[in-house]
Length: 61
Image 1 (cartoon, rainbow, N blue to C red):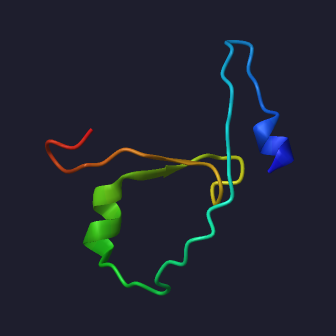
Image 2 (image 1 turned 90 degrees about the horizontal axis):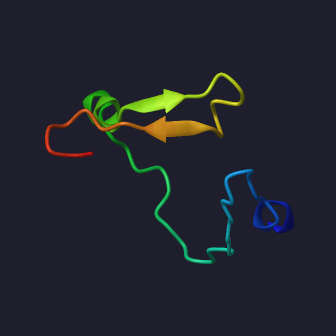
């Protein structure tokens, strides 16, 4: 987290982070259609970590 917290950009972006200690349900199943509605666009560099959500459902931006 220290590495993330120390991140800045040439445009002045500052990053704050904290550890989320909440517990969340595991192995929740969603349909292929629900995944497609999320509009996940994976980056070429480590797409498993770097991705953007562009929802395809009308009215969601």
